[in-house]
Amino acid sequence: MADSSFLATRLDRGAAPLAVGDLLALIVLLTVGALNHSTAEFLSSNPLYLLEVFAPFLIAWALVAPLVGAYSAGAVETAKSSVPLVIRSWIPAAAVGLALRAFVFRGGAAPAFAVVMLVLGSVALGGWRALYFRLR
Image (cartoon, rainbow, N blue to C red; front, top):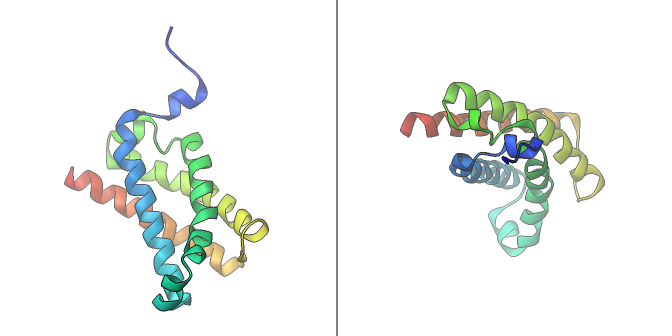
């Protein structure tokens, strides 16, 4: 009997390269953001700082993206299906990440920061996926 659970329909093995690329895109985005507010010397001498920057958004992404369908069978077909899925996944994941940042981790969730994360995260994830399908 095939496993037809909700999560099983949301995860496709062929999406593994997308998952790796999504994580790298988010890490690059968050690192660039941290470098805009801190020096490279500060970041290199305080490696846990970067982990605290990454953690709320990567945790949120890991929780939300599979539920919304960022790694479903449709996500691996074409850029036309994959890019909207990743953006639709990023919006609630960013909201969860902002809440984690505000209430669990050090940092705030100012409205301007929320807008920047929503827009730049969508551009980073959507752009990387569009590039992936163009080069594939």
